Image 1 (tube, rainbow, N blue to C red):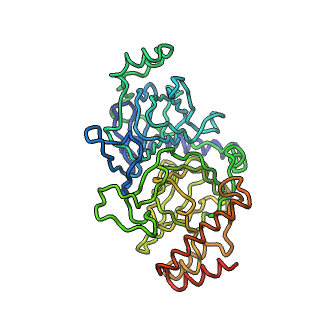
Image 2: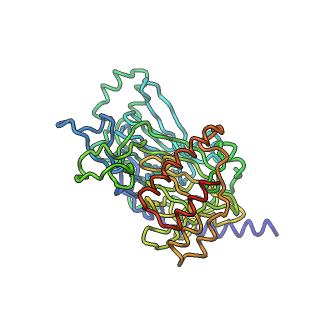
Image 3: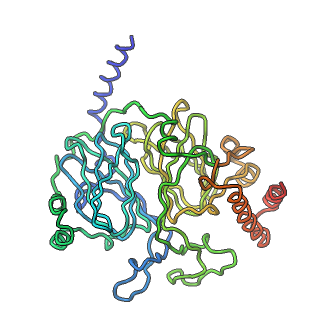
Length: 446
């Protein structure tokens, strides 16, 4: 009986695959000048002032405002490749789908060639779901299986601008002179590859869903994940070395006054890392409790069950987005953006499985930017959403086993002190409701 069911499943899947749209059409991707296909998914409306001299105007030497972050879809297939190029900002590549890993070639600051495998560790043991490419380094990429494809997301902090992008073709002689031992690999990817297997995109980019070989426990161990205070498991994978000043009012210090000119660098705004990225895992009945951040955050789907992301925006509207593979789950998306200061909670669709994702934040996340919701306060603000608020708040919050990782009791005391100072400023300025004050005072007295 089992054999018959497997054969029926394979037959249905094979028939269904023929009728699926491919990712190029589904995601409305276009040919990229470096090779492959791309489509802009997100550009942060928030502006930052990068502190690195790389972002100064060449003519005036003045600092230039930038979007806090951006994200694209990018697809490489078959004989196509991404030619040598470089950016002014760090870029994180996220592996979403495909039956081939992507090899990313990087010439580091010391002239050494490094090759990273972006892909699914169920297929390639040493593959990574996230690979960080540092600002200013030359890099190229290709699919390892030239009969297949790989679909990725690329997030950039500060956000991508076209004048930040340089192809290496015009620097070929200079690169070969500088790195003579890398001549063959430089020439291999020096010219943008414009080969397309079928200009009408009638080929199928989809692969059958694979059975998870790695369990939630495997990922917790492999990625060294720890319990997170909102629920689930996490680890910090990346924090940009570049710093930025945010030009948005909700980042300003409480004592600071707002600048009358948003286009002018305002020293009163808070300094932050340009971006951060974490791995995050939800397992079975566990959930991500209602919380909010000061920065926009993008969730990226990697493996396991699709995830329902519930969002209450600043106007009280409730919406649910599905994070997952859109070719396998109707209405899903590989990327979901949560706007700054919106409340968010999440759960896996399949309560017998898990969901592994990445979460990128621009500007980068600070501990003080994270606010875990209190049930009474959220119900007071949004009584129309009573059921879902009750469902995704905990009477006793699930605190991280270690935040940051491996902190001592002294570290916890420091966090508590910083938090109490921040809360005192809120009391002093009378910016929260009486019910909030009573609740917070009771917590501080505990």
